[in-house]
Length: 124
Image (cartoon, rainbow, N blue to C red; front, side):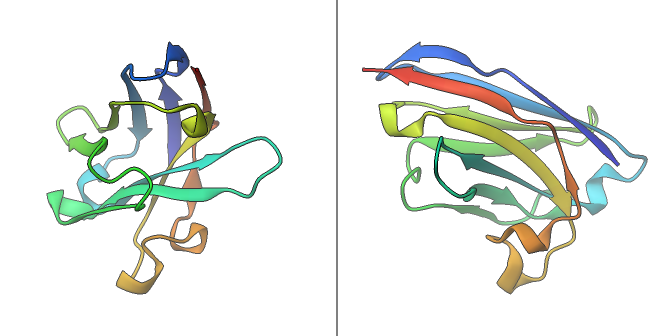
């Protein structure tokens, strides 16, 4: 499985961006997908996840109500719509694919495949 993320960039606080992650896999619908981010000098942290077959969604408290994860199985793509962006959202955002059990959905160990990351910079 290969993942290619895109859509990052520079945006002012309060603005929006939509990240995309295209997966090269024949059975995309069978994979749970997630977004993680890593800010400079900080550890990678969970942002959002979506179960396989369009199941439940999960969000970090810090982005709940502002970010939306979705998937288009016909395009083998997962999206992260980010609204009301804040300077603290500045980070490299990476998409991940896997078959996590419920207890691992928010952890990096729940995912086997990772994209290269796309930089999001939010200016104040």
